[in-house]
Length: 130
Image (cartoon, one colour):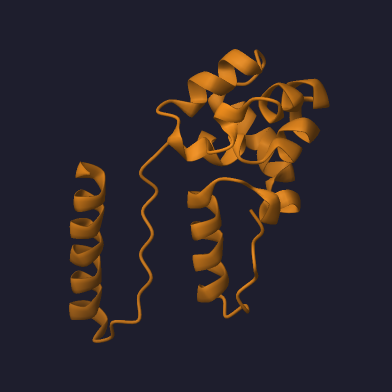
């Protein structure tokens, strides 16, 4: 996959540049290559709190949203399913609730990012169901 090759190359370049500057290789590089709206689709609970349970139900009841990272344009999905959703305003609204339901989020990329942040902060690894 082209994105994975680019991501690995960029990751390596960033680590090499950091190592030259700081003489250490203890670096964690995570590059988000997709729309963050995948993370929002992965948290139906946060969507329910932000925009009302009826909108979250639309997503929860459809099997196509069980893997939110697989959608090519999750922002378009959100705009279609939740008419009042707007990229900036919607992100702010969902962000108020995203951390509350972070461990239940079905987005694998969100869980990877969260696990990386936990590791960086020295938190013990938590088992994520799903």
